[in-house]
Image (cartoon, rainbow, N blue to C red; front, top):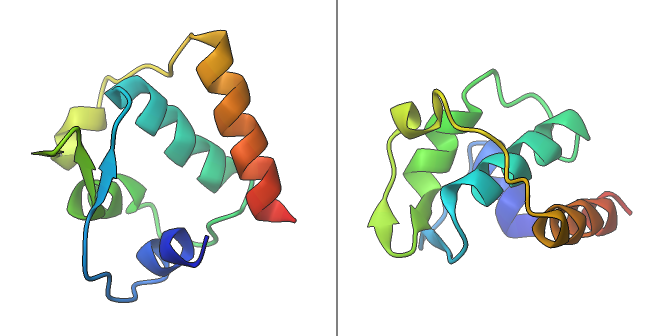
Length: 90
């Protein structure tokens, strides 16, 4: 959890986080973090921060990769991400 908070609080992160699922689940995860205020005050730079500190299956991301991205519709992934964010809030 401290790794995720560090990202959005402008602290240094030594290694990028390799997201092993698809881009739509990463998009949903970041939206959940912001909307649930797990990550506070990203100054509307959350996609820039995401692209700087996350890899998607080992590949780099750009902030523009999220412009027209839709959230994952896979129910199992949505539930898992929602439960993870709930656990982070506690």
